[in-house]
Image (cartoon, rainbow, N blue to C red; front, side):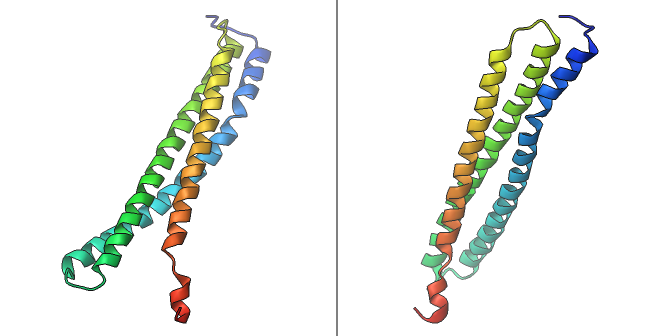
Length: 150
């Protein structure tokens, strides 16, 4: 491994490695959005669990339990999305390191960059599917027809 390289090589390596950083920005934004949804899911679950403990004889208990089950599913999807996004960020970070090392050293590891990048994008797409499924479940809970008497 060469310790001293030309500045043009280092510059080109940095240029190659900077492009995937934009994907990291998208990943961090989506992690924040999903984490926010997860916190609301947890808060609502705590409220329902308190109601179940305090009002065990209420006629609304089956409805609350059904909603708790839906919240658990949503929480699982949100947690899965966060895990996939974290894995995506790690893969994109690995892509950046491999691209830089491949450009500035004698290592021939270009294929690793391809695999790491495709793995990261695949994780990102899978996380988007989980996020989409979670939002569909959240929308199912809403019953707008009950507001106008239907």
